[in-house]
Length: 254
Image (cartoon, rainbow, N blue to C red; front, side, top):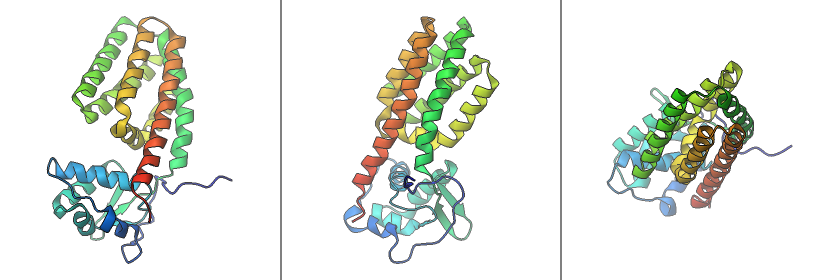
């Protein structure tokens, strides 16, 4: 039986482990990196997100805002703002009067879901190609153009939102309710990780792949669109695995 990584999304045990020996202590000293003014809350968000997804801080551990602020050389305000945003995307759970706790995420499950999603998205775009209309093609092209514009501006958030719209429209066009249901289910489970993979260097590759999918659909070549879509999802899986591995190297345990 394969060993599972420690990241699991689901219920957190909410154990408070901020005493001596917590991995948060490793953020001080050599790992402490001051944040420079730009958007301190954004920078704190990115830093804490990376630390959590790297597995350096375990599910159930309390995120001590004072300690994080000290490690990043900022006030507690930007850190608290970052923790609220992390709670909104499901990485952190905020418990009244107790603080912010890391939610547990099963990274191996996410990797397996990518493999299933590749098959679902391949089937979805193939079915959509058979039901394609000029109106849907225009909307998909608008999404593709909007993603390309967001990529050129470096607007990760806009790119991510439009990316979801692009994929959802393809599945709605498929006319297959089961495929749409499966796609929506896997999107909910993977949303955080899809965002993370794009935010950590995946946008350029993802953007090119969307344009190739779009070109195949406009050419009426459903089989090519299906191949491009499957490659798109599998390469996203590989990017995510690479990003998490790089973060673990960036934040050594000793």
